Image (cartoon, rainbow, N blue to C red; front, top):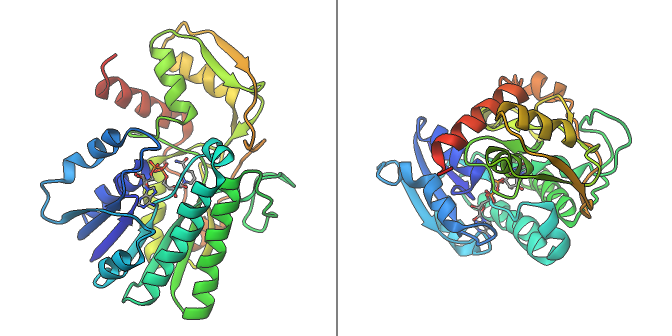
Length: 311
Ligand SMILES: NC(=O)c1ccc[n+]([C@@H]2O[C@H](COP(=O)([O-])OP(=O)(O)OC[C@H]3O[C@@H](n4cnc5c(N)ncnc54)[C@H](O)[C@@H]3O)[C@@H](O)[C@H]2O)c1
């Protein structure tokens, strides 16, 4: 089996490369975008660089010609390359749109012209946006509140349309805030952990009452592997429980035995009020259920953080 992981040097992509290397050969396509330190991304894939089944291609999903060449002998495309993050999408919506909407369109066009069996698209809970009811099932209205959410929704629509027009198998996995080893440095769990371990003040954007469904990375990888063989369309992939940002910070302070004070600042534009996944559809069609919950995931993350960074 031959797979390509776009954005394969990133947080989620590098975990997928790791798992897929047990199943065959893997091409990692990444442009080492400077949104966060590209050295972090190089470190993510360092363990695979000597593996003869692993190939790194430094390139851009906006290069359609390159995609066509790479997809020629590939079975599965795990499309994770994106401009992730809500805040940057508020400041620079064009960048998010180009990477996430146009980039996904390119991936799909290249996939149609090749022998690709299926495109597994990394989508996001951000496609829901404004809450009509909780938890979100897949038929909850899509009213994104950030350019990021809008761009991920466009990408999903392209996946659906390509499936209908060209009979290309596509699935969009709506990830709910993912955390774990190698997580993106801009995400709250990383920032809170770093501060807590140094007993520094933790600042929460807003009053801390926003809630999130956090998903441990192993659950995300498991869902991707299941999605290779089953499911067409959109699926929630979450942890299935939610917690307020205030409780999250308190949990991290407790796990790290920290003396950090928690303070509250201005809320950030584009941040959804609440997210919470109903994963019944993924459970029924993919056999997915989150194996690692928040508490266990946080402990594993803190342990990894301590072992992998100079305190
Ligand atoms: N981490 C989360 O909580 C989360 C939640 C929902 C959805 N997602 C989605 O999951 C996917 C992976 O997210 P992540 O957290 O691992 O982010 P990440 O930033 O760590 O990984 C994305 C990778 O894509 C690469 N990339 C960006 N633009 C590219 C381009 N034009 N061409 C080639 N490579 C490019 C980046 O260099 C990076 O290595 C994204 O599609 C993101 O939108 C993530």
